[in-house]
Image 1 (cartoon, rainbow, N blue to C red):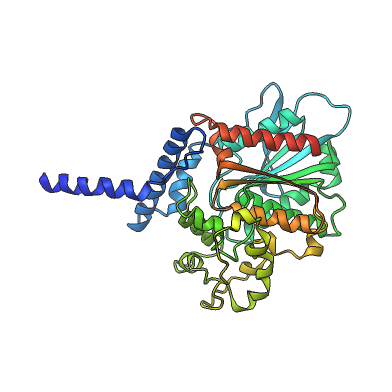
Image 2: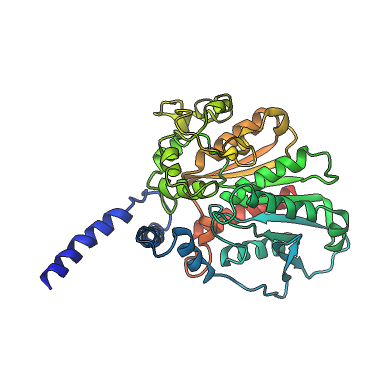
Length: 401
């Protein structure tokens, strides 16, 4: 009995140490965010333990929990909601019930969750898309790509591209009463990555008759080349999204080789022939001064490993790698970044690169913002930051779409 008590006494402080993250004092709803972070890190800790002893993979355990949050396509007095498929890609449609004399605007939304998790069925994404359809009187399409690691790159990207290409056909736009000149593609986190990649292809491919009017990227992931950005260093033990968790997700997008996350952590994962690409993600020139102050740029170590992963240098993985002539064709853009976010600097660098080639960019930076806030605005959390980001996003769409 005494031994069990001793083990428990040692385990409790060890567990607390593993999951504890100091929360910045300017975070609104401080205690709620603290509780959310503890809950998230407890789930991560449990998943890692279960994976370590061979019971269940980390991503499968988290997916099992998230599936408990799935919703059905329930219509309401304002919006008809239905699940269907675009060329075998699951989508959820939100169609305003109010009659319209003219074709409607449309928003295609690609959900986040690290390429490995999530669905448009999750309560938060369903609520966001429903709210968008209602507030904008717009047709909204939620896209469910297949998930890594069962379906690695380029499958998730290709699923999103296929769904968008199908929707942009004349007969489909007519079927759903959509104005082909007023279409937006949006996404958050990894969904922002997929949205940015798809939009680059659509806008630069002569095969597409209809182009996208605007894009909206919410705390997006936009590059994999450099894993030592200032935001990576500042948010190594970040709220909800830690460095280890982010690197685990992006690794599973490519491979289940257990050495790969450690190579990324040491910034030694890129091949020697990628050297010329780093000018596109050089944070020492692309980040505003206040975000690079106090940091010294160091070049990654190239060619240390020989991973056979062509996606590492593919612009569909890292939209920041697109050259200027490719970026010039992009539509008016909304980018939202959060101060306490591992992915913050990806969005900031994309703002700089787009503005440098003349793309009109609206950039909102939330000084007390955290990653994944949009996923935290539904019951029982109701995080006010999530509602604030939602309203900023919807307001910009309403003015520009």
